[in-house]
Image (tube, rainbow, N blue to C red; front, side, top):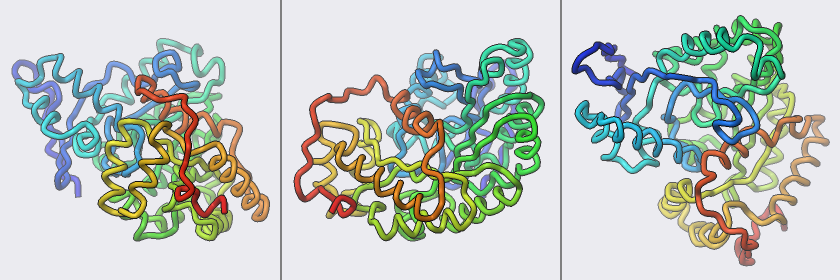
Length: 367
């Protein structure tokens, strides 16, 4: 249970980012955002984005966005906030861990967004009908949202607009709290929800995504959103080689998703760039040691699995979707998590050398 501390941003010697809540070993800091609607020119992604929080308490082992927390730490140190204790608090943890234990709450996000849309009028994303994605680098419905309601405030602003093209990415059933707003937005704009779900195995999910909602709760959210008339698909992202890519388990997942009324499925295999690798490979060594060497070899020279693996997954998933009458992908399927991950880590070193996967790493999907 998140315990709000409700410290204020007073002037004078008060900290720039006061602690506004705690949850076990997680600290939440209030922050005043200067802007929340990020343009494609700013992020390098092909869409506009909004992230109501910085960092994510769900702690998914494979998360690509851990890289983002480095910028927060650098800014805090550069602005001399060590006097307020925040720089020390951040740097006592490695960046990948700080990402899930030190969360920043953009408490004025709705106010800033309303001002931004008012000042720009019908320009930018609204005028050209460009996509706005909420949740590219942090889950907008993580536990902090129950207390702080930043995402709901953002949606209230967007509900006042017309002709938006809005996408929300989340793992959390908390999104169903906002069904009223989602319906209002869908009446005026194009809205799609992408629920992330990579396995039906509750125990496996708990090990991979330790603080995320259970698969069952996400399926219930899918059912409720569809009953409310909200276009909702499922991101099977990432498919984890050797863990979640068994054909029978993928087939069961797709069939269940279809039975719950999903409008589409977006699958994609794991991308493992340098910062994500620092978390994911030690996680494998501890939790699934029989896979550690195979992953180290498979991702030694590239951040993706082989083209053969990716093509095999695509063909397999398309056949599954055709069998159950579920749409494979959306027109924007390659714009969200994949491009977001690439943009966040565009300064990471990657090799163009073809990936040579040893025979032992050719997993069951391609058998």
